[in-house]
Length: 383
Length: 86
Image (cartoon, rainbow over all chains, first blue to last red; front, side):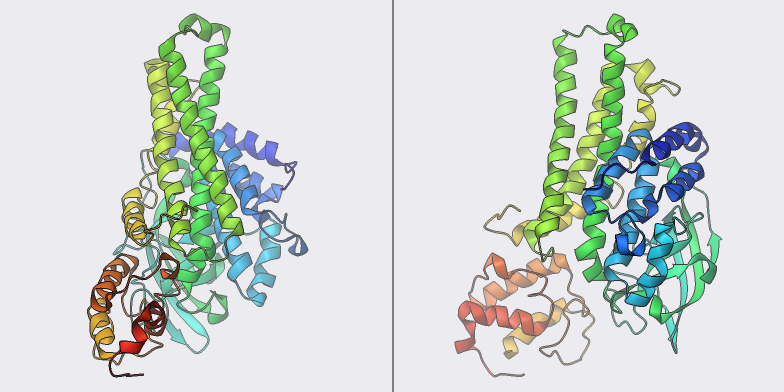
C-alpha cells in the first residue's frame, strides 16, 4: 500500500474550495486538476521505474474515496483517469509505454475516455465507429455523446471498430494525443448532478499512427475483462462510497455540535435506527468493495461468471446503496439542511451527484448481464 | 465438429453469412454475445443431451467454434458424433 502522498491534503483543499462554484456553473474543476498534476497523483498507477508512484488498484480505490468525500465529480475524474492510465500501463506496447508513462508521472497527461457512441450509448463491447487504415496510419473520425473532461484532456483512449472489422464486436482501443486530433465540442453539459465532470459531446478527428493501438487490433474485449471493466466498477464504487461517507460524516458532526444537539434528540429511536441504516449501507458497500478488490487481485481469469457477477454486483449495489444512504440522510436532517443549497452539509449536491450512479453504465444493463451469468453458474460458486 | 453442431451454431452467428464455420471461427466476431451464450448453451444441452459443467462456461470456451466443440466432446459426445467436417 502506498503511504499517504504528501500532496493529497493540498488536492483535497483545492477540490473542496472550488466544489460549490464548479457545481453551480457546471465547470470542470481545473484548479483541482492542476493540484492533481502537481501532486504526481496522475501517475499513481505508473510503475516507479517510469517515475510514477507505483500504486495498486487498492490505492486507486483509497484515493478516489478520499477525494470524493469533498467532491464526487473530482473523485470520478481522478478514478477514471487512473482507469485509463492503468490500461496503458498494462496493455500498451513498449514504445507507447515509454512515451506516455513518464509524461503521466510528471502530471502532463490527463487522460479522458472515449467509449460512448450515439447509436449504442455506453455499451462497451461493440462499436459502429469505423476507422480507415492507410499504410501505418489510422484515420479516426469519432463522434462521442459523453466525454468526461474531454475539453481538458491531454490525451484520449478511444474505442473504434478495428480497421477491417466484419462485425461490431471487433473493437480496438487507440491512444490519441490532443495535438494529433481536431477536437470539436458539439454541445453543452447541464445535468442534474456530477456537474463538475463537464462530460460534453465531442467529435474527434485525426490521423493516428497504428503504433498507438493499445492491445491487439479488435482486442478491446480482453482489455475490458482484465483491466478496464474491473477498475471502472472499483473506482466508481469508491467515488460513490466516498461521497456518501463524507455526507454521513458531516451529518454526524452536525448532530453532535452544540447547535445540532438542540435540534436532534440523540436518544430518539427514530434517529438512531435511521443512522444505523445509513451506516449499515456504507459498511455493506465497503465490505463488497474490499472483497472485490481482493478477488480481482488474486484471480487469473476474470472472465469466469462468478467473478464477473461479483464485479457487476459491486457497481449496481454501490450505486443503489450509496444513493439510498444519502436519500435517508436528507430525510433525517430535514428540509433546511437536507434539501436547500447553501447548507454547510451540502447534502443536496451529493444527492444530485449520486443520482447518476445507477445511470453511469446503466444498472439495468448490468443486471441483464448478471441474470445471464447467473444462469451459467448453476452451482452458485460465490467468488 | 459434426454437422448438427454447425447447423445449431448458425442462427447465433448473424455475421457469418454463408461463410464456412471452422474450428478457428471466432464466435464473438460472428455475432455471439453474452446474452445469446445462454441460449446457445441450452441448444447444446438439448441437442446433445449433455450438461456442460459450470467450470467450462468461460470466455475461452465460447471464444471459438473449436473450443466450444471441445467442451461438448469433453462432456462425452465425441464418440457418437456424426460426420466430421474439420
